[in-house]
Image (cartoon, rainbow, N blue to C red; front, side, top):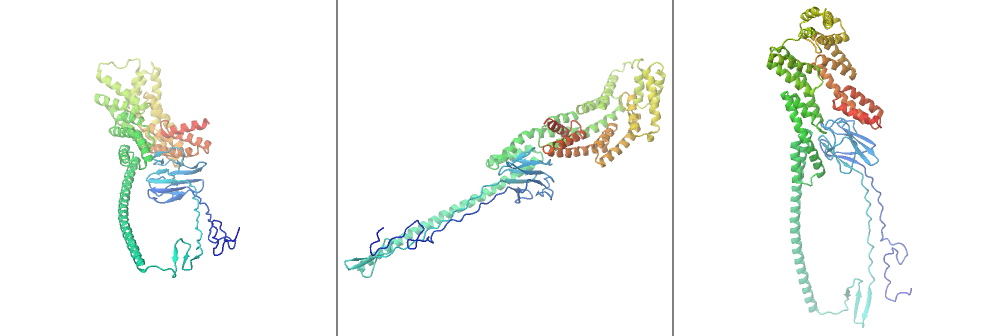
Length: 580
């Protein structure tokens, strides 16, 4: 390359980062600094409830959520169970499942029964608390800083014009006159005035534009702040309305909850649309159940057993199980109360109105408990009495069945009269001879009840029913009292030692002898709760330890009657495990 002509310097090279003079890298070029990637973790953030604002990092493979202080995710909320739910790390991320909590667990407004995979932004609802799941996100790449290369001032060039004037270039494209260049002073003065006027006008225009722009900007800022304030008020109003709807849901008031949800949807369709839509779908399914439940409770209060039973039989619910169970317990208690009322009417066998009332009560009880033997006997007794009252000329039983009169007298409490009739017909009829021996045996053992053990008392109670034709007589009252006392002691002892199968067995025997016994009923109620806890343990182990789960489900079935909800669920899961 030829050297540059005299008086000119070669311009610096650009874009190479190397100084043409030294050949070394230029200090004006900087390299970008690499930033390490960030690692994101899954979190649960409480956005409502007592722990609102608190964030829980999901570390490990499995974390229990609940009110207990020793939980990895502890929520101090009384509407949350001690061990409410669990989140577990899976191949797909994280999943949540309910641990048999009292209020249940919902995901995006829908109740969950099995383990459900979580997606970023999902909302887990437990009582008054809502937890928002945040999944891992990609680490943001660091920005690459750049720096403009340092500028260099071009060398000054000098030229001559016939030796009269010298003009020097600064390298910025504008020539600078030297002292040796001449100019007219008046022309220069006019030129400066024009420049001053032009500059001043430009400044006025710029100032006016700045003032106008500032006014427009202030107006926009005011409008934006007003819009933000209104939006905050709107969001707070929607949040309060949604919270009220969820409280009504937990109370089982689905019709009222639906009104709030529809109001949210009509006012702001973009407010939590997924959750609101899920709640509305559940409400549409649960409102008929709520009406049936209300109808059943009203019927129970009026003593209309059949109407209450029919209403409860139609309910198919996933969110109101506790209320349905409570209504069924109330119905069972009302059955016991009506049975006692029916027994009291037996003393009015010649009163048509009382016997018709007895028949109606017995029929009502049989709708609820179709296999109840005592209710069936009460109905037959009432029908027989009604027929005799309405047909007074009907002849007594034929003389070839005198043993029926023996049984009837014994049932009415006339042991001496029954024995006399049995002895009178004993030579002619074998039935009378058998009844004579049975009555004597009953009277002999009844005189030493304190010496009889529970098996002897049960046998004596059965003998009483055999003599009376299938139902217990008034003479068996002392036997029942003694039997109930001994059996209830056994039931209480079994309960104390947590032997629930034995406790249930003895409690059922107590209720067979005395259906109104509150202590035995309480043991069965507590056993039902224990059975529910056993069921929950089996449910949790059905996948990891199916053999142990099957054993627990069998235990539930022995602790509950066939019509019990936990009994039916346990039976279903047991069949599924055994069919694998």
